[in-house]
Length: 373
Ligand SMILES: Cc1cc2nc3c(=O)[nH]c(=O)nc-3n(C[C@H](O)[C@H](O)[C@H](O)COP(=O)(O)OP(=O)(O)OC[C@H]3O[C@@H](n4cnc5c(N)ncnc54)[C@H](O)[C@@H]3O)c2cc1C
Image 1 (cartoon, rainbow, N blue to C red):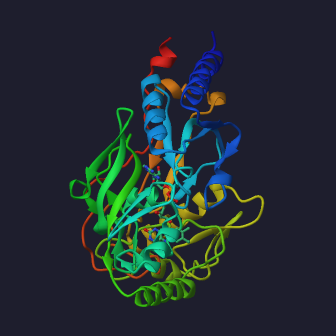
Image 2 (spheres, protein in one colour):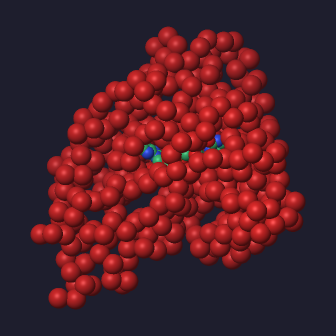
Image 3 (cartoon, helix red, strand yellow):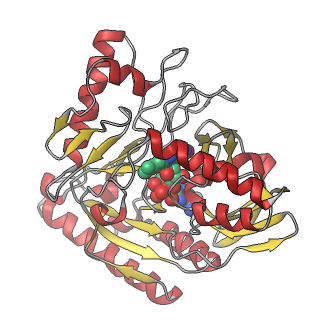
């Protein structure tokens, strides 16, 4: 039997298993979706399956069943920090966007599910006179995505106010204290294979009008320093460690604003933003431009830029003869360490912490049980 035929058989078994899991837990499982529809850069290839649980319990059961069956999966919130390549991605994307029941406010606490919109949560909290996350109001994405990478802006980081996090473990919703999580600069100690289901945040009371003013101030600053309404993923690179200049400034000074490769352009407003344009933009355009920036910064400044955006690479096409189910070839270059904290305005913040972990593979590597059958 050729490798190609074997691969197809493996995928057929996997598909049957996924359909069975979707039926068992009554979750929506779709085929034919593309990263271009699910990420803010609006590029990226086809995804084999997107599964969308609607409750935390359902989500915990589903990922447990996927693990037990040896099916590779990867969590996705709003896709505002992901650049997925143009190839076919032969794994399950577990979309958390359905996990968005109304947040429960109780005094200074709010319990919120992972799929809830972070900006909306900030507005809701502010209206109730609850402070501590108003700086995060302009960060597009879900609460889960923010927790995963300890999103932050304007002196606020979500980890600072997280009292507990609900995670999927062994098919159940397990609550862990926020103090047990390492909240570093755009990085946390959450482990590969962990699906974050929700959190309880502990905020503090303040005058609702003052909170609103601070939110509006942050919004105005963002609007004046960042592209908005376009297709981006926020800052593409981290700031280099120890450098007084932010990455945006370095790229700007090299004259690369507005540089274009295919459907990707260095934003004329903020040089650390790559935006995509037009119907034909491809992930490879953005990646080519990003690599060119890195090459020039390496050559001209001796600095190795690290990606802030997560690169989801799929090398698992059946045509290439790679059996993705067995080899777990999906590789992910992810948000890695050692740069100074920056806000998305390109300003280097006072470093609170350093990222410790250099690797951050989010893909749940499959075991090979299915393909061994
Ligand atoms: C215009 C713009 C401005 C931005 N400004 C900022 C900023 O100021 N500060 C900042 O920190 N970021 C910023 N970002 C980046 C992005 O918005 C944040 O990283 C955001 O928190 C990502 O949330 P998301 O739901 O889109 O996550 P996604 O992009 O969907 O996922 C990001 C990562 O989190 C993982 N993940 C998502 N949900 C879960 C979950 N429930 N359980 C486990 N893992 C999960 C994914 O697997 C992936 O590894 C900006 C982006 C844009 C487009």
